[in-house]
Image (cartoon, rainbow, N blue to C red; front, side, top):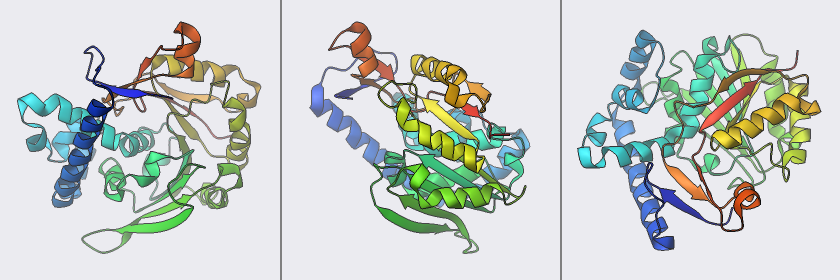
Length: 311
């Protein structure tokens, strides 16, 4: 992907070049710092109780209300942009927790006390502030502990482990494992295999954000990972950048021989926790269909589908 520019809602694409791109990312950096401060000062317990009472969150507006972020969003002039920034920063943890809470990765997943979750082909997700990942517990108040595995050739560090403790009782709530490797040859695979067979109190599943798995240039690279998921009996979720990307990924998963024993268990053509921060990319698909300078509008985790574990 050669060039990207922010597209603000449904407005015509921005033409400000790299200067505008830098300014927009500076706003993202500032928003991230502000959100970290707000979330640190806002107890999650009240939000979690509200979520259980109302039976799950269903999008960014409701999440913001539960987490006490309305004052940060309140300025009418800035609300739309701030909501886009919020969604861009938290789409990965909230998409993941939404999938677990909805049972998209298994009917028993929402009841598990311990989660082992692998992010396949991890990139920017591995460097997201740990506090943002802990927002998963807003939708999963019954979970005692989460093990997150960020695995991929492009993660920021070769190997790293760190934890997040509960600010009230000091217990470890999150353990993060980062590994620069392909999943089928990683240490994380063994951990996930053991978790998958540990019993109903533990849930294990894998997530591939914006995987592009149907693209001719990379689909063969997924073959050993799919074999590893099969062997470990792990359900998996694959997100897509936009509706066209999603349609191609679903068609590939439904028709390719490598997927024949992994039926699609759920489809979400519109993810309630998708990024609302839309971007314009020059992609291989756009170039192939409309010429060298063609672009398409994309947003992180716009849609997703899940596949069940091998029976």
